[in-house]
Image 1 (cartoon, rainbow, N blue to C red):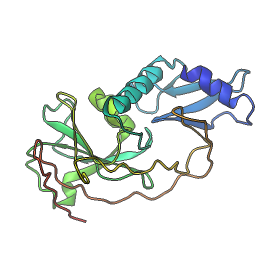
Image 2: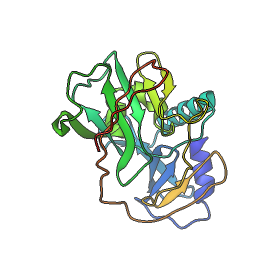
Image 3: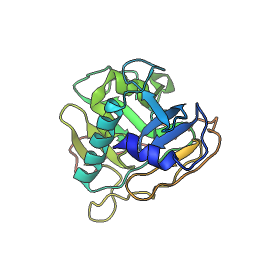
Length: 227
């Protein structure tokens, strides 16, 4: 599906080998001009390792779209190339690991935070966090992959896939920020509606936000800002 759709999109557009194409959270690279244009994706096995077999990418795309439909929300764009703030207490497969999206994409930051419930490390100490790419995290812990396009205000608990909302407005409805394509990729595709394209150079800045706290199962989510 993705391969055919991207080939159709690129068929009447000038592209060069090495250029990138974004579809949802995924980023593909033009490997051969063809015709038809041949694309490759990261293989989700090793860092900086590419493959022309797009079956894994297709499955990821379907899983992420299914997650959005299940919760009735629109995508909040980010890609494999963006980073997350990660507590140093987190380890792959941790039974109390969670994801929390505090912000939309800014620079290289996805706005995601990865932590564990009842984290023994202090959230007031910047040395207890590190930046890691969403691609690296996805290799280490595949449980995260379906959630990456979920909007600001999402808290996802990886052990059972439960989703809760933080920063809600009104009668518990989440305030979904508008989806605005960010510059930084040669071509940008949205399959939910029409295809769009943007061009530009990637930002060299990293948003230095510190995460808010999350309390699972609380009717009024407690947050502590440490900006």
